Length: 158
Ligand code: HEC
Image (cartoon, rainbow, N blue to C red; front, side, top):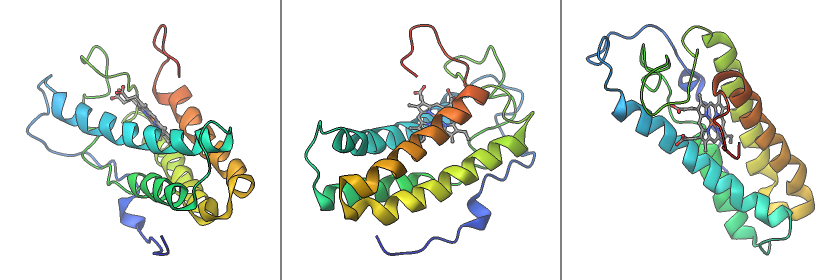
């Protein structure tokens, strides 16, 4: 993809939101939506990881498409994905914690992920060697946020 993204406003606006869910504890919709976006990221990045570790053959169009999906998934607007109370235990079905209490760090980490997704997309057509460092850098941003905002569950891979 050669489009350039300018999505300043998409960077996680975590201003308090008056919402129908506030005060209720059924956050199943918002939790499914945000977890869905993370699965899209994980699935697409995973294919690129398999290419750089020789588990899948490198194919330029596949690599470019997957990197583009990663890039686009980082652009999903976040401002209704972290409704008040939906990141506080013991809300059922979520491992998110403390995002609204610490929004600045969350925003910074999300912004860094967007930048690295752009870099990954930019090199994805250039073969495995060109792509490998950008793939690793991308995964690092995932982990650095999870360490902060998604406590490890017992038995979980990451
Ligand atoms: C800025 C913070 C942040 C970044 C960056 C981030 N994540 Fe997450 N991720 C979270 C949080 C918080 C949750 C927990 C969401 C929940 O359970 O409600 C999560 C959950 C997940 C899940 C589990 C979803 C489920 O069904 O339980 C996967 C998979 C995941 N992230 C993958 C990724 C990948 C891959 C990346 C990087 C490309 C990434 N994440 C980047 C914060 C982040």
